[in-house]
Each structure stands twice: as C-alpha cells, then as structure tokens.
Image 1: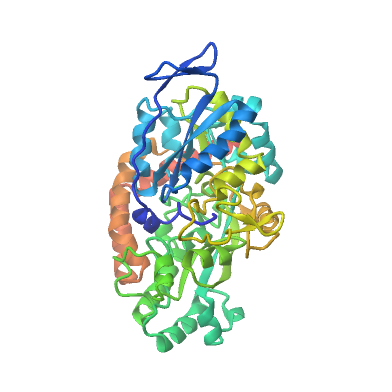
Image 2: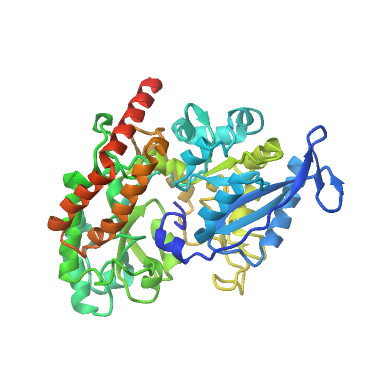
Length: 505
C-alpha cells in the first residue's frame, strides 16, 4: 500500500495523537437543509464530516479544504469538513465517535475493526446508495476486477468500499543501494531469504555501525509470513498456500513458520540483527535515515523502491522474493464507509463517488493545491514547487493510497510514468486466495481472541526477531496458544468459512 503508514505498528506508536471537534448539527429531513446549532442559520449546503487517519494535521489543511469545497459545492451542493485523527488515537477516538451521537458521514473503515463495526450496526449498508449515487465507484472497481468490490461484502451486503491502490502484495527485501554498489553485491543471486546470509555478512564485516537487517513493524518476518498464508484477517487460523482445500490450520504449528523462525534465529546469532531488536521502538525508516540500518524485509508492490527511498531519505533497492497474492485483508484493510450517524448518507455517497471519478478532487486530497504544494513537471508528472520540500511543505501527507481512486492522481517525479498501469496489472494478475471475500466474525470467540492475543504478545516478537531459541520457545508458544483457546477459534473460523463457501457456490 502506498506509503504504508497504516500497516506498521511501529509507525502507529510514533504517530501524534490528535483530538477532534465534532460538528453538531440537526438535519431537516424534508428539505435536506442543515440547521447549525448555535445560530439557527439555515443553508442548502450540507456539510459532510469526513474522518480519516493521518500521522499529522497538515498546516495548510484548511487551505486544501477550501479548494475541495469549491468542487463539491459546484458538483454535489455540499461542503466537506476534514477530520484527520492521529494513528495513535485512531482506535479510541473512532470507537467513541461511532458508538455515540457524533456526526460522522464518511469514515475510513477496515483497519482491523471492519467486521466488529458491521456487527455493532455502526456502518450503513451501501448497496442501495452505490446503485443510486455510487455508480462511478462500482465502475472503477469492477474495471479492475469485480472480485475487489465483492470481497468487501459481509453476509452478502456491502458496508465498505476499498480504495483503489495496491490490492495485492508481493514480498522481499529492501536495501541501501549505495552499500549494494560499494560492495558489488550480486542482487541476481538473491533468490530466497537463505541467500541473504552472505550479503549480511559483508555488511557486518565492513560496516560495524550498521545493522544488516531491522524490523518492519514489530518483527523481522511478520509481514513475510503473509507470502505463505492467507491470514484470514487476524492470523489466528490461516490457509496455507492461499488454498489448502479451505482447511484452516494454526500457522504457528506449520513447517513454513518454523523454518522462518530458524532463519531469523540464525541471523540473530550471527549478529545480523540488533540485540535489542525485540524491544526497540524505532522505525525501519528512521534507522535507515540515521545511517544505522542496511535493510528490512516487507510486503511490496510496483514502485516500492521510490516509495521507500522517499521515506528513508536514502536511495533504496528492492528485491522481490515471493509472488503477488490478494487476500480479503489486502482489500478490506483500507476502505471508506458511511457511518450510521450520518445525517445525509446520499450526500456522503455523492462525495465518495467523486473520490473515485474526479481527478481534480483526488489530486487535492493527495497532494494539496497546485502551485503551492506541488507543481507540474509534465501534464501528469509533479514535484515540489521551487523553495518547497518535504520539511517545509504545508501539505505533504503522502497518503495517496487512502483517498478513493489513487489511479486518478498525478505521478510524483522520479516514479515510473506507467506506475498506475503497472499497479493495475499487478492487482489483476495476482494470485487470488480461495477465501477471497471471506470475513471472519469473531464475536463468538472474542474471549478466546483476547486470551490468544495476550499469549501472542508474550512470545511472538521475541521469536520473530531471533531473540529466543525457537526449538525451546515455539513448542511453549503453541502450548500456551492451545490453553488460551486457539483450537476453538480455528473451529469457529472453519465453521464460518465452510458456510461462506457453501453460500458462494
């Protein structure tokens, strides 16, 4: 996903918390007008409250909001109130907003809580609104692959619309290009994780101040495990090979997982992983930027090198080791929904439709105001204006993956001019999980999920950074998982998956 702010737990820890101020209003349903509390002033312009996560609130947020409103007032007779919430505060703040009476129209859903929000009735069913006001969304997503929109369904109904971005992932390693060049590292010889030992040894011997490889998020290989399994949303019960005859297994008991742990343990003992890897909270990007890290293993997509180069401030080189695949989570991890609290769902859907069809609007969301926050290099290629850079720009979210249809946005100078075409082909040609479209409802085993999560927090990071011996700790981990209720979770997931497969026939 573009500029992966949302996938990395370490980034979440760094993100600034941000309080929000709600927009209290009362709607006159017969006229569609809004009476603003406090001054009784009526207006035909409905204000759409739009809630989304961001690492920071840009200095020029209101400048961009004003420009967005010029478009929305003309095209859908509505204005937009942008409500960014810090990643660190996202879960708590949105839970309060959706469970109370806060006016929320459009909200980002899918960040690990989609099925829970649906089961609580906090999100509106969208099928009727998509048919009436959202045909542009349907056309844009179905133009890529009808499976993508269908994957967001729960019980046959749509409650969220995935943003158009990288809807698949492949997997590999990203390294500092200057050091690859300096030591004449043969990247064509890197075909698997085992081929990295020689590379890491070269860095260890010649660059003692640089750690050969560091965590991506909370682990060396947490993301990489998804190249072997459909994690079915939470990793507690997975499908090996994205198929396995739809038989759910415990990932932590599979030979693939044990082999990954042995690899990471070997690296740790050789000194390729920092001794404090399990407890460090520094992000991979900051470690590379500070000259303290050589590489990290992660999920990937077309254009990943330029993305990671921007985020590290260092030219990076990426080696793709595992093929691209699409699971339900790839699609539902970032979506847009209309909240139950919306006073005008039709207007909310009209705005959402523009986010999938209106190039001018998308570029405002993604890049800000032309001439102030970006300047055109060619008709579709942009860069910072003279005197503006990453550090002083008033609007530099770098979150194009979030706002609707990223394929309508300009391409940043340095990226491949064909990037969106490459990404569309990447999505279309990826291996589709046999469980694509299945969403697990954890309500029946929420007690066990909590207990298993606690066990996972106790063992997983130490194992996946090589800090402890998997020969001893992995059996203990699995024993503790069983005692916490892992088998019950898997049985419930299997039951739901079987029912889903039967209904899908």
